[in-house]
Image (cartoon, rainbow, N blue to C red; front, top):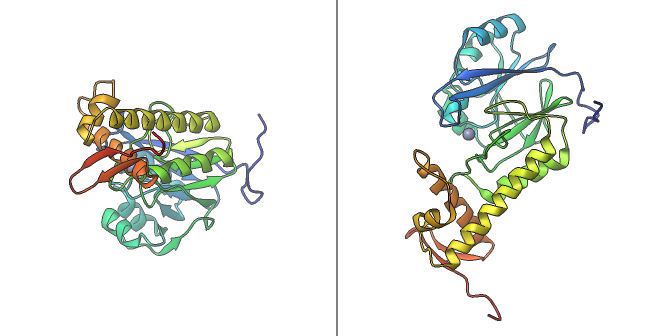
Length: 274
Ligand SMILES: [Zn+2]
């Protein structure tokens, strides 16, 4: 299979190795993926916890750089340890240095923005799931954090999650057409375009259900949840509710519903000409 690298600066032979790390996470499977990107100059992404395997790899390969796709607690657990032991340059997204330091316990040495190089990878702007969300792009694909998963869907939980930004991030990844996506949880995604299209369709589908529920009289997130979600939400109802809120906030900004965040009340918009 020959695929173009989206950017000629991205070496097509940049290795991306995945390490599944058991960690306290609500993602299915109870693991987060850490990645070691590159062979000569290396970037360690999302060291969620220490494992014997990661210890060995980091010792043998020497991590030159450490960064996270976003500073959620299930992605950052061993940043401090590996940074201290390897002397790697610790990077954070510019504008989110405090968020990074609070989550990891480490002050970043350097900051990056979209388009910057971090060791063997280039930074892609992928907010939505988290405000500081980024991908690390190489010629072999994008380490994309929690923007995409091979199966199921991603939590975009208001107030931090931003559904408009999330859809833009998915469209950006779709347009980049990378050869693979390396997600924060679960296996490598070998059909990035199909996966991005599936996730976009899922969100738009859910948005239609949310709007239909509001039109039918659901006037708060719980009522919308009961009408718009057909599946069993045992154990994940809070996440689903926060995702409904993110849909409502998006629809409110697009003037398709009225939303009072204080009272958490939702009302349909009277349509012109109806
Ligand atoms: Zn996350």
